[in-house]
Image (cartoon, rainbow, N blue to C red; front, side, top):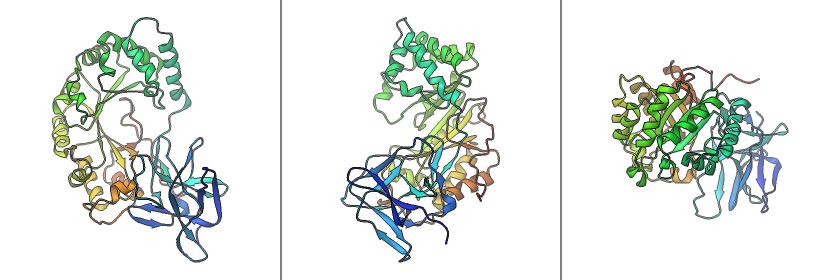
Length: 393
């Protein structure tokens, strides 16, 4: 019998223990199972352990060779740090009929004197120098004396530039668009001096009603200036690609990359979980980029038991091939799994497993790069060899 991690559970105060005999279990869709030892990785340092109140962990009892509900504690989970993808969900029973808040629920156990989880590293983790860029930039912003609306906005939202991959994420809203073109370019030009591979990720929420009234004129004017005077800065537009006019505005001024965000490339699945997200709009937008010299990436928000269904896998492969996607970014969907799998409209299908899906995609699409972080234009097509599926001894 292969080694199985011990069950972790929490008491009412949140103190976490490992059980002396019971083993951890995991969930995919509505199926609970026992994880293989080789599917487990050591949990990265500084990862916080959390517990779910009003839950009963599902455990494997080796003596009885069966599953059982552990009634003397609460289920424990983690949220994987950036760069890591979960392969399974935590297995537990709810005491009440409630939906938990949206988080990246991931199981965790105890094995060989360390915390382990069914996760894989899907991208090269940036070094400490990249992460330190945010601190350098923060110091510059705090010492900036001139009046600048963009500086004020960034200081109020410092998490937007304290990133691991030298990326400033700029959510499009009425607050962020208060700056004029000079204020944008002055600050972004300095960021390009501080960062080695600077990325400006313009994050546009197509579904926000207020965003439909946004005036992009000053930002677009700033991008035109930056493209002429700053070749170092890489500019990405991230959106759900529901508005082809907005897309055209940014491609016309020279955006380097278009990133489409999706939970599923399957039209039927999108209808179930997000009726506003019209897959046909995504198709039309990507078709409009045909023959344009623009890099394309897909950020896929994954859920074990959904993303690795047979129909989802086939749809994803066709989508990546049809629209010549250069980079597939794999992220963990923040959601209570019950919101997904208790849907009456979701058909029962074979589950391939996320590892197998990634292997299949890599095999079928030799030129596709896979990762987690948004990339600089110069690094977009670099093969980092991630994820690494070599068998561990």
